[in-house]
Image (cartoon, rainbow, N blue to C red):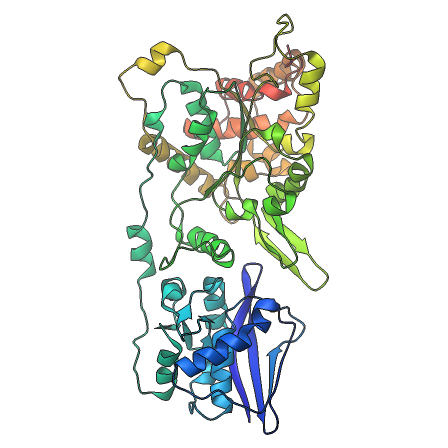
Length: 512
């Protein structure tokens, strides 16, 4: 007898419905599983047989052929266990139901018949609802994630026996329902860190406020112990809260990566990813034999922090250039091409020299000029070209560290950032641009117009201070953000002057 059950598999952050066909014929025992299964899928046979026995049903015998269609798509993971088990029970007439054609089945089976959680549930649920399926059966631990999708009955089960009883109608399992909007607002958690923890560094706090307000990438340059990492870890606390759409996008990436906590439904805080400098280029941008998201995609709608920037492999920094610019990563393989989102704020930190201190040509114990050049040449020039703000971070004095008064906290800074972002949303309404940092060169010329005084200030900065040509658009974008924070429709001279101060690494003679 031939049976059809349905499941799904993820490719990138999207999903494809998979038709699991089970053909059971009389004869000597024979078992064949086709349709480009990986090892985890191929090993499902023993798990499925043990789970069926544990559920009190009989394991079918005879000639068994299982086809996972479409055959050209690679299948990976253990989520195929449950649909294969249901297909075998249908083919052997131990299940009699018309529900199977309207139901997606997902779940790994333990030998005792219990269901174990799987990854990629949210994009699968979205695709199931889009394709007209009414029900999705899955482990209890994944139920909240699937229930985010409206118009789909989420049947949460603990064991294969529960699934059999639901199909046979002997056990009525109530679909899980949640109010996504109210749950999202309720779960917007407070951060455990705050900008009030930082002593001094008022100029750096101001620069980070500008970066957050305009979505600008930034690099901090300063000696060890000056607080670069401490400041970077507090940047998400002043970014606008995730919108529901942003949260769903971010949850998709974390879901296909298997990073969702058991029982969690949605990501409610902006991601902060801080990979070690020994990370490979594949781990940073994504890839592998079966493509998976990298750190740059796991930081989507959040912050990617690269501490000790010159210590990263140059190859890894080079492959980041396009994803940072385009907002997505495309990974091509012989059998598939997948894309992952990568709209991030890139934040980096570095020491001003190999010795850790500011460069001083007269210091015999410091770094030499040739050592400085080798050190700075480790940084990818095209990547540095995509960083808007270069911030000098100096060590905090004893008086600043010992003062009892706390600095300004994250909440008032975030409120100013949100007001600034609202101005930008109105400015870019109807465009595929959400903040000043995403403006194209043509948009910069149209939106960031300068009067004669402003043009004179920028010309003087370009010529006398020695700023590079690549700094021109960056300065205008940052100046536009500073003007927005100042609630000023026009870019004034003091806005430009402040923006110029944030281009340390572009100055001629930066080495001393």
